[in-house]
Every structure is written in C-alpha cells, then in structure tokens.
Image (cartoon, rainbow, N blue to C red):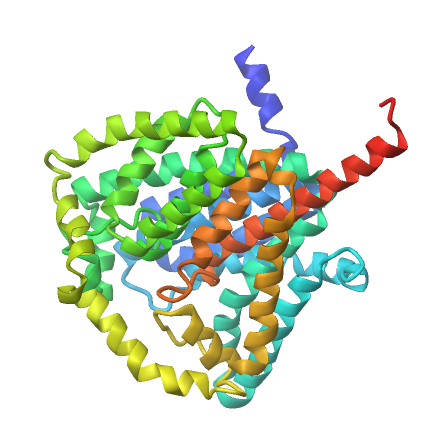
Length: 458
C-alpha cells in the first residue's frame, strides 16, 4: 500500500527521475569534494531539469523552482568547502536560470497581457528593461546582465503564476505544500547551524569576512540557514510562517516551532517587524471563525517558544530584542541613518539613473532611484502599487484565506522597502510569487462567479 502511494506521488515518472538524478549527482559531487565540477554541473543540470518540468510537469516546475531558490546557497557552501572558495560562484546563478524558462510564458501571453489585466507586470518589466539598456551603456555588459537577473527573474515568475490563473487551486496547493516543507527544512537547519556551526558554514563565513553575521562558532553566529545571509532568510521565513496560519497540513505545528525559533535566531529586526505587519493584515482579512483559530495558534506557539527563548542556549535572543528600546545607541541603526543622509540628495536627482549594475544598497528606494532612475522607477513602482492595490480591493480574501495570506506576505515585504531591498533575489521571488498567485486567485474566483451566473443549477 505504501509502495503504491509512493509510486503515485512520484508522478510523472520522467520528471521525478530527472529531479532525483540531480539530487543524487549533486550529493555525490559534494561528498567527493568535486566542487569545481559542481560549479558548472549544478546550474547546468538544474536548468535542464527546469526545462523538462516546465514542458511536462508545470506544477512540479513551480515547486522545483522554489526548492532551488531555498537550497542553492547551501549547495554553494558545500561545493566550496573542500574545493576552495569561489567568488563569484556560478552556482548562485541557478535560481535565475530555472526562472528564465518562463520567458516562454511572457512570449506566449504578451499580445493579450493587457486585456487579461497584466498591465502592472508589463510596467515593472518596462522599468527593468530600461535600466538594463542604460546599464549596458554605462557599465560592463557581463556585470549588468548578471545583476539584471535579480530584478527580472522574480517578476517573470510572478507573471507566470498570474497567467496560469485557470490552474490556481492546483498551484495554491503546490505552493502551500512546498513552503510548509521549506519552513521545516530551513527552520531545522537553522537551529543546527546555530548550535553546531557546521564546518562548511564556518569556512564560508570566514572567507566572506561578513562581520555583521556574527562569529564563525557555535552560539556565536546569526542564523541564515540554507540561504546566504540573515536578511533574505528572515524575509522568506517570515512570509512562509504567515502562510502556515491558513494551512491545514499536519506538518504546520512542527514546522512553525522550528521556523519561529530560527526566525528569532537570525536576529533581523526589520524581518520581525515585517512579520507583525503581515500578521495584522492577515487578521483583518479573515472571517471571525478563522481569526479565532489564528489567535489560538499564536497562543500555542507562544507557550512553546517563550520558554525556549529564555533558556540556554537561546537566551541571547533577549539582547537583540533589547535594542528596540535603545536604537539611538545601536550601530546598525546609526549606520543606516548616516547612509540615508549621504545618499538622499543624489537619489532624488537621479532622473536617468545609472542603470542596473549590481550595486548593493540597504534601501530599496535608493536602489530603484540609482539603478532605474525616475524614468524606470515610475513604471516599476507603479506596477508594484497597482498589483498590491488590486489585492486589497478584491473581496475574495473573505472567502479564500490563501488570498488574504498572499496579501499579508506582500505587505510584509513592502514595509521593508525603506530599510531593505525586498523585490530582488530570493526576497523578490517571495514578493512577486504571492503578488502573482494572489491576482491569479482573484481572477479565478471571478471566473467561478461568472460561471455560477451562467449555470445557476451547477
């Protein structure tokens, strides 16, 4: 019986064969210390698998893309551990390569995008393409094209989900299952990372010289789990934890326990505040019955987590929480304020922009103005605003908690715009995924309502 269940789950067989072959091949090369081979083999293999899944198993493609996003930085650290530090690492291009397959979706749906309500996506893409062209004029081409993937890939993936609105229930279930397991894996590994500090993580942290991530020793580092720094980890885990509130999976409680503990251990204050903003948005959108269930879930989590967070080896969390009441002496807050004062005037007068170049800034507002300029920022930010506004205007959230959760996750990302860059890379994938699937859900619900009017007896 169990064997038949496994065989049914691993369908279609060719798609799962390709996925399992990639996992096995990656594991063998990591164990063998063939990191230099893995630098090329992993992105190439993942890209090939993504093409197969896109064509033959669209649902698996969505889940596969998310797993690639969540695990690629860890694969990079394993590859570098015994083969030497590689910077820049080709492995980090893997998530973007898997998403670039959705250029096919853009090509297929571009002529009818406007009539289908996809104008905001086109606006965002127009702003990005403008910045790419500007960047190619002002900056080295390879640097521009690699950096452009961070901007382009999340929007393409969100657009792909939006255009497949007719399969919304299946995509919704797939995302819920994938990200529930994702929280369980990321949360569990995050706790192990904090308690043990695996050698590959310590080696990577030493090579990157990122002092803000703590000391490369057990109980001394800020958790970043399978991602490549605490900030994107906090962004993704915060969104996924919000998703657990409206998920009926039996895994949601163990996933929530390890997920919240790792979320606290990453010590990202902007992530904590973003989660609170998303939680408030979610509570407001739910029916009273679901609000009660959510409140009960919060109480249960508090009863489990508060004792854990106040005893060794997790008692250090209180020192980070104390900084909320002492921001005037907090070095991170002071550095952000100084950066804001230095860049403000130049950003506000950046009409044409410097083009996409991969420069790293703490604020999304500065990133948009410097790289996209006002010419690119207006359509890009306008697209973001229109999509978010559409999520809040729809009444579907009252009947479909998942849409309310998509709205909450979008809010948890957007409130971080002044202090982080939540629309790029892994954080951007979270934001644009739930903008896309949220709008797909609204469109699907409207279609169902029209069908009920046409066929009232059904």
